[in-house]
Image (cartoon, rainbow, N blue to C red; front, top):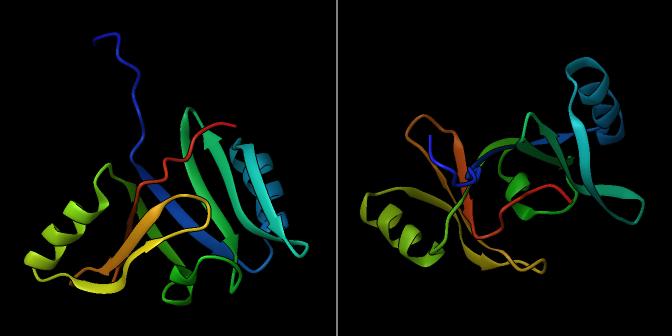
Length: 130
């Protein structure tokens, strides 16, 4: 193995009805570490937790990212060139469920539904430890 630092690109992203309980459960039951929690109007909009150097993200059902009005969970993939990635998905016939959108936190994202109904989100934001 070489000396380059591994960068995670694929992140599970979930929605919970009680994300504060999820923070406690994931910490106590599975050994996750809280990295970042972003709140709006007293509700968790986005949280990031790590386990063994890898990250997951989650938030509150019905709060925050409009992507989660489409699905309660998805796989988020960080990519460098969102517009080229979107063009590739369109050319392959992917069902686009959210067109490329500039987010207020600086990411540019889009989402597709695969042939089995799973939602995949692609964006330029790369979660990581605080």
